[in-house]
Amino acid sequence: MASLLQCIECGGTVSSKASRCPRCSTKYPLGVKCTVCCKLFKRSEALKFVRDYGETRQPTIVRFFHHACYKQVSQVRIGRSRTSCPVCKHGIEFDTSNSVNCPNCGHHILTKLEKPSFAPCCYCDFPLNTRLEVAIKEVPRQFLDGWITETLYAHKICYTPERQEEEKRQQKKEQINQIINKKRQTKNFRLRQSQNNQEALAVSIILGIVMGILVGSSGGVILHYILGFGSTWKSAALWGFCSVSLLTIVTVWIARLFD
Image (tube, rainbow, N blue to C red; front, side):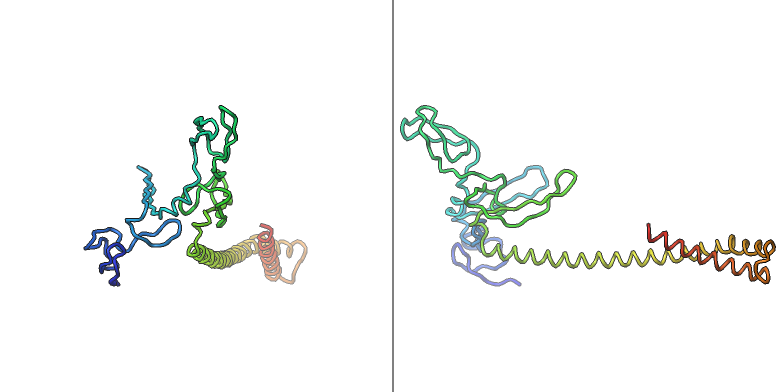
């Protein structure tokens, strides 16, 4: 349900579901959230960065920054940089490094660049360095034909209390989902095992009856007339049927245990 709020830009009344302020015409009457500190502030005071992936199916990413927050997370520069020697004033171009020697006079210069990491911040996507980074969590990622565990890093200033609470809630949710999935897998396993047991029982009974009739009964009759087994041929046939049937059922279940 919509409610009346105050426009962050002009202070006028605006609906909580309004897409534009009717007075100052801003498209963000409720403000924008800083990607680094997660605080709401005026769009007119924000730096806006748009990442467009072109024809790929990935959505366009729009990020807003406080000027001060942007200055903190963008201080690590990747690529070639320029400086000048404080002694001979010779211009120097160098790759990302925290120090460099002047090629003209050999003076050692500290570039004030931090050593970058291989992965960007998982929140602001700016380069990390060993002084500013913090490990968030480990996530599985598919690599070639298998899975590997990858650690997600972020700037310390980007890992706000709000995001820490969100990570805790997400981890708790994942733990609950794992428990639910484990119970579901156990239930499905027991159901499949019960179905297999029922199928094995039916197969063993049918096979026992068939083998009892074909082998047991006929064998009992043959033994009765040749060796005089049993008082009558019917009793010999019945004994042979029962013996072979039980033996077949037991053999089927033993074979299933070793399957």
